[in-house]
Each structure stands twice: as structure tokens, then as C-alpha cells.
Image 1 (cartoon, rainbow over the protein chains, first blue to last red):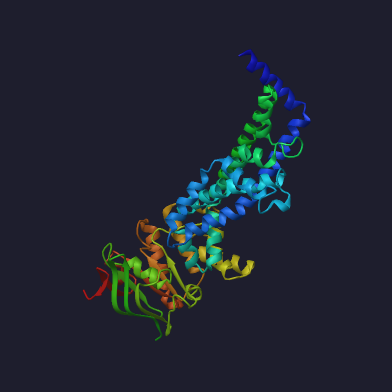
Image 2: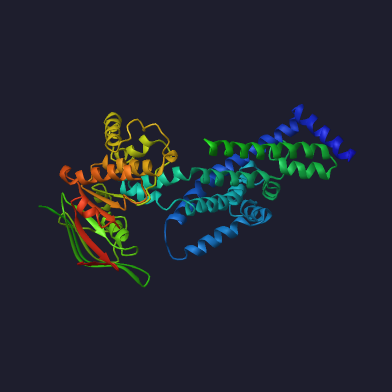
Length: 228
Length: 218
């Protein structure tokens, strides 16, 4: 117990002193996660809306595939993207492996199915009267869909936040595609894994506290928006 | 006398179930029609088709002499002439003003003109000063009146009302009956569904009876 308490105290001291290693890892984590979330939202929200609002053959199969993609292990995504970005891979010439961009690409693949599924769920859970009401009041198709999005915006926002949560907390993609390079591609999760294995438990705990605080703040932000 | 709707051999099916099967129906402008029938008679289905929200499975509809082309035609343009007020109307999140202004905004009506029209429509339904109220905090009767104002403000050629007087208090019923009865003289054709056999007489309307999806003579 003493070990945990002393580590906790050391972790708080590290955070309070703005340790450059902690700040670097937090900055890298936030930037790659934000980048991946933006692109995942750009793909995932329209995909979720499209699947939710239209009827087409094999729709159920598409939904099943989207659900399955949510559960793909991060290391499998890392492996797949690694295959494409490695020197022998089809995109190896771009030299993206072990860069923040590579982590963003992997993050997009992880988060997009989540954003799409949550958006789809938001559409399916929406009041069925929204679209007919907008249409009968003279809205065109685009305005009607825009109105629907406005009415289910918290569901869509929750989708984006869930996507961010998936990317910021994963370790497989960041480790395999980023390479855990200090000050460049080292994220909070890869730093926790590395430093803890080196016996730097307090450092890992400091990053864990920051990670939990970020998760808490993001959810508080969502709650505040919902209350407005 | 202008014929607005001509429905020929209209059928609407959900799977193998036929919910509407109308050989012919004509609706003339500047009149008030009451659509009478039991639950499941096909009243709401018919209104949805007449509002151009849901195409029939088979048959032809002519509006103002032109055949409605659901696939290639612009039903969006037709929807701007016909407004449907649902039985349990949905108010968008936001203020009463934003709700009533929705259709005007969709039509590109400028701000000041829009504001005046919204105030006038709210006054007609007895909700002066309600513009800044949150739509979701209104009572059932107030919600019904806001939805009516939202439809009236558009001055539609046809107003389709799905049980507009169900589940509201007597005071609101009286007010809405007066408003509805006055519409044909102002150029709006009204088709409203009702369970109440007194409505056609009270509203000076013509009755259309639906039974099992068919238009019948009582």
C-alpha cells in the first residue's frame, strides 16, 4: 500500500511540475487523437446517417459489418496499416511509418466504425416525426436531414466523443505505427506501457491520472451541453 | 370551382396487407372536408399520400390538373402548397418562434417579414407573446396551437389535419374549430380526419367516410 501511495504522490508531483516527458506524451496523444477523431467523424457521421436513413438491399449486413469493426482489436488494425505503410508495403514510399500521421490513420480506422455505429443508433432512436414534419413544412431533403441532425445532435456528439475515447485510450496502434519515439510519437498509453515495464511506476501513474482526467472532462463537457 | 386532387385507383399496401383502396376521390378547392372512419380505416395513410410524404403503391394522383410524378417529379414543390398537421405534432427543439418560422425560413422569407408573419399566426391561435417560450415546455393544448400556427403561417393551398381536435381541452377545441372553419373562406382547402360525427355539421364541412381503406357511402 505504501508503494501505491508513494507512487501516487510522486505522480502528482510530476504532473504539478509539468515534467517535459509528461507534457510531450499528453500533447502527442491529444493531437493525434483529435486528428483521428476529426477524420473519423467526417467519414463515420455521414455513413451512419446514410445507413440509418435509407433502405437498401444488404442493409442488415452492412450494420453487422459496422458492429464487427467496432470490436476489431487495435493490434489487428495496427498490423494491417503497418503492412501498407512499411517499406515493402504499397504505401511504403510515403515514409509514414513511425510518424504521428501513421497513428492518425490507424486511429481513424479504429474510431470511424464507432462514430458510424453511434450515429446510426442516434438516427434509429430519433423521433419518427422529425423528417415528415420538416418535409411537410416545405423543407427540401437536405434541410430535413439537417433538421434531423440538429434534433439528434447530442447523440452525434456522443458518437464523436466515443470515437475520441477509443483513440486516446488505445495502445496497439500507437505502439505499432508510432514506434513510441520519445518527443515525437510517444503517446500517454505507449509511455505508460514502456515506463511501467522499466519500473517507472510513478511516471506511468502520472499519465494514467492525466488520461482519466481528460476522460472525465470530456464527459463533463457532454453533460453540460446536454443540460443546455 | 377548381379541382385540386383527383385520385384514381389508389392502393397502399404494407407487405401483403392493403390499407387503402380508393377507386376515385375528388377534392375541390376552398372547401372543408371531414374524413370520418374508425381506427385503421386508412385516414392517416390517405393524408400522408395527399401530403406527398408517402407514395401510393398503385394508382394515379392529379394535383391541380397535373399528374404527380413521385419518382421524377418535384414533390418538394407540391409539398410547399400542402401542409399536414400530424395528430401528435412534433415541435423542434428551440423557441416557439423558431418553430413557427421554420417553413418560412425554408422558403427564404426575409427576417422582418418572417417575424411579423409569426406574430400574426401566434395571435390567430391565441398565443400572443409566446414567441420566446421553449417549445418543449408547452402544455399539450399549447403544443397543438403552436403546430397549427406553424401550418397557418405558410398559408397553404391545402391544409391536412390529422385529428387536430383530439386530446385537447374544450377551450382550445373551440378556438381551433373557429380557426379551421374560417380557412376555406380565406382560400385554404381543409381536409381533416375526425372520430367526432358532430364535426362536419359544426364546421360546415363535407363528409368522406372511410371503412377498411375504402371510401363508402353511409
